[in-house]
Length: 223
Image (cartoon, rainbow, N blue to C red; front, side, top):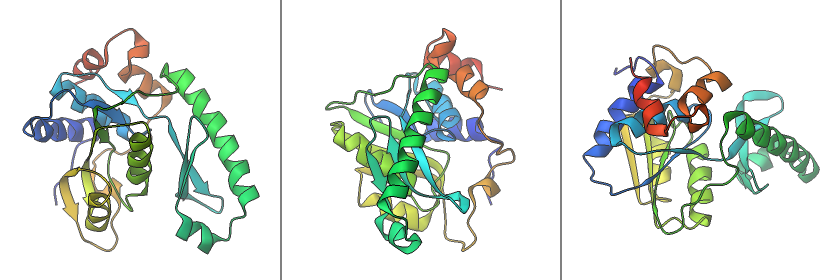
């Protein structure tokens, strides 16, 4: 089984793969939080900047490691309606949670020095995350970017379960994965030697808010 040292090492390998696709001047977008160090390394390989997608998880209250949807900085919801039905969450519970998570997202963006909105009108969008389990996070990102007017959408991750890859292939123009697995007990962290939480300090060191371009930050952080 192929294992990456950490998210940035995975991002460098993913960047090499993407460089061979000949994508001309894409808008590179990172899904927070895990996708940010991957995207920073991809940006270094492609010699372009990157932006953080203003998107935040809505977690199941009694199962915090799982989510049932996402909220954007403008308050738009992307819900897994089938799962919401199974969980029997009321609209009031969902909207209350979404309002709280939107506020936290805006605070995060301000701490990171990231804009509350991204612009992709008519451009090629390259969306990066550290992996896909169910594919719901990437699907939410794809739908968000599509509504923002992207001309073409490519989803790219170091590792994915085959069901997530197959799911996303129906919703974007291309899906790029270095590893695709079909094992039942699939967990992203099993494919990384170091898979610690991505902190605010980590993110600030990789984003333009530190007074460097995204490309400069990504390349200077290589080890």
